[in-house]
Length: 104
Image (tube, rainbow, N blue to C red):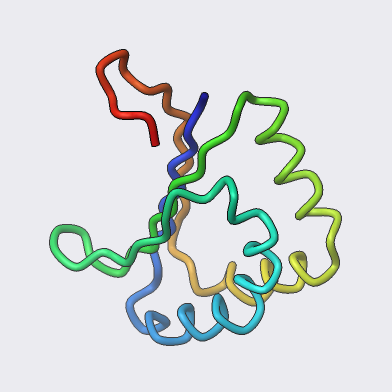
């Protein structure tokens, strides 16, 4: 099992807009993959204006399949075009669970 931690740093002036764009354009496409989703989060303390999401996959091939399929979806591409200008940066990390970690 691998995990992907995606952090989007939102330009502060677009904080509310990003949530609206996710709800209207992003989530309708992403929810088809919710079996892989651990959770979506909005930062509250620490670095602000972040959207963080954690995904779990059986392996790298499963991860690649999800994102390749999404990137081939015109509605998801449209979501990307809408949200990208509102982001200051994005960071993705691939994580492996420590041996003592609970199974999520």
